[in-house]
View 1 (cartoon, one colour):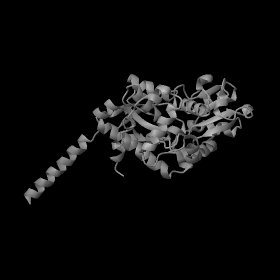
View 2 (spheres, helix red, strand yellow):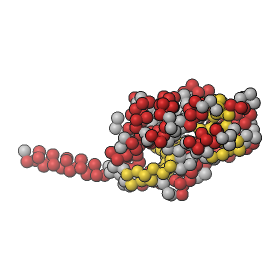
View 3 (cartoon, rainbow, N blue to C red):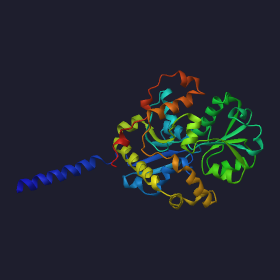
View 4 (cartoon, rainbow, N blue to C red):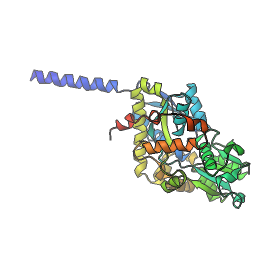
Amino acid sequence: MKIRIALAALTALGLMAGAAQAAPEKAKLELGVGGKPLLYYLPLTIAEQKGYFKAEGLDVTINDFGGGAKSLQALVGGSVDAVTGAYEHTIRMQEKGQDIRAVIELGRFPGIVLAVKKEHQGKVKTAADLKGMKIGVTAPGSSTNFFVNYLIAKAGGNFKDSAFIGVGAGAGAVAAMQKGEIDAISNLDPVISKLELDKNVFILADSRTEAGTRAIFGGSNPAAVLYLKNEFIEKNPQTTQALVNAFHKALVWLATAKPEDVAATVPEAYYLGDKPLYITAVKNSLETYSRTGLISQDGMKSAFNMLAQFDEGLAKANLDLNKTFNDKFVKAVKK
């Protein structure tokens, strides 16, 4: 009997030790994002508002930058530990010799829309017709910028013939179109839904649905992910796992959430002054979020092919796309 009690005690101590080892190596984190109110990054807000980070033992400070390119710069510069951003940044950084890897897919469709000012409807029939025009993007070098570059190149044009202007991801982006400061805009919901409601624009390309994404890219195209420096991942595997666990919980919640549930969870500032509009935008976007957290090989290739369409240097690069996504943390999530 005493032996059994002793063994039970040792087992309990072992479990306690295991739990201690599983604690995050770095509990206090700085996380970057480029346009937090955008529905593109909704899993981040859900993880924050639902307390999923805290439940994983993490104290996460979210730094909202003007666009994905700026949050990437912050990661490279060392001012943030992780970024919720576009998957294609991991590909571009691999080409530059920077080992940055995604660890969970948050969006399976980009959700980006290219919209053009109504007055150009007869003139602009393809993205190549945007030559000489001012195009608003969240920030130059961000995924919204890449999206337009790809569409222009695909249509036979040259993206260098257009001017790209950073307009952010909120009310400022809407105002830029309303004031006539830009001729077209590549952005996401709720910005696009607001412009559609006001009848200021017409849609040239829409990747908010599977059908729209396939029409544009010919297949799936991974969107938002959580990415980090591989050096950080290797030094802090439990911290990385905790982050992935929190985001995975957000994806699970979103898989069954109603638009009204989302609106009740996010800050009111996200509504752009119109809650019914926001609910409609959420309804239009719920299909975009990842169901598994995993990026397929076809998805990786699709993202690479998009970038290679307008980036000759990348097209000639010999990259191992498997180094852009580490799937072991998603696979280790307890379902």
